[in-house]
Image 1 (cartoon, chains in turn purple, yellow):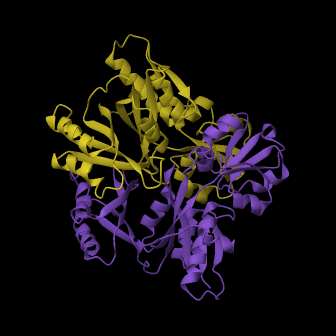
Image 2 (cartoon, chains in turn blue, cyan):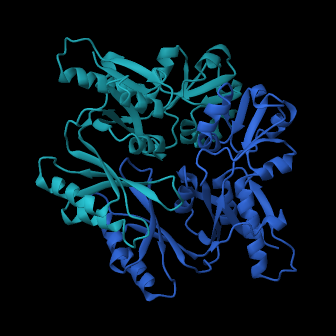
Length: 288
Length: 288
């Protein structure tokens, strides 16, 4: 029976992504085998570490949100723990709901949620709940026990969190940007399964003019499309970066293997996280 | 008398950067004129907006930390509010202290600070204060009134915050990475003052293979060194980005003007934030 660590607790968007991945994984093996077991973790670092320590076979973590951008803990963790390979990507729509026992919005005095969720509903909160204090928590569901007991409190979380905790939804789809989605990665220690997307990261030699543009030219010369580049500090000194790059590439083509070989000449450290497919969302709903 | 909006309240690292900038600014005009007035703001967005609305002549905001990376609110705000020009950059060392009325560490039950400061002292807190709850706040100094009253509480903040609030420093330089620095920008509506660094941002046409690498080649072909590239989501859909680029360039050279003209052909929207100098830190200490 496979095990999947994820950024918990139950009711977070990452749990939904982990359920989707679990469903897909079961379809890859004998569908009559027991479903994978989900292991909630308290942080992204702990989730990745559980996979590296073989306490879980896979780990599901958020990588990027369409509004907030990169999840820096995930990128920094993947760079530090270099055995991890991406097994699959999942993209989920993020639909924030206001959960509370209050009779109406005017009775709410405090709103709890993860800082990203509070930020993503800022205009809605300014308009509909200007009187309520916004209190950051470590996850969208952390404050649920208090919200269940006290009708002056509210939380911003998913529809699934409302179901799990039996809390009424006072308002739905309160995100300021309706097209809000998050991309997740399922990582593991085995080689990546192959697919149309490839992710890698590299640092470049310091203080060489044009040091960054050379690795990017290696990709462009081979007509490999770079769909994303993100920089993260090396944490050694201000102005030194690690670059995370996603490309769209057929792994069977020789181009990508040649590009990776050539990248080694122009980078200080190069880490290839493998190639993988993006799974269709919603596959895990039947498991939840 | 010039006015400078900054991410407050008093005692934050941004206030120190604003004091340094105020000191430098006064040196640019008649030194016997009254010193610039500092206007604390509650958010980065409010700081930038105060400049755009001419409620302040300048705004000082954090751009990048050597550990945590980009300050995404600042980048997103500069892209949205397109009249702002960078007047100067400042780099400050970040030295976190533990402030509390407690007799010793064992009496501390709760630690308040901004999530970035809590993250930057994680290992130290794990080792020296494993029993204490870590409570995120909107700024390093927000919880000072409670910490002043209750000896079971502590805050992580600067030496200057300890002085301002008259709180004892129980431990100093508790950052996990000793080389921790933050880069700040002072922005205004007038044209940038010119200097050795130039910052710009652009979006690229969608779905064109190699769309991103072309603007970078424009810089490389002219031997202009790109010291930084950062991507931020456009917030339209997942996978669409705005790129922020810093280059080192002599603004008197024709190369940089030619590069900017050429960049217009390869970008969808191009915003040039101007060229500026990096000011020496500590210049504002005499003002504080």
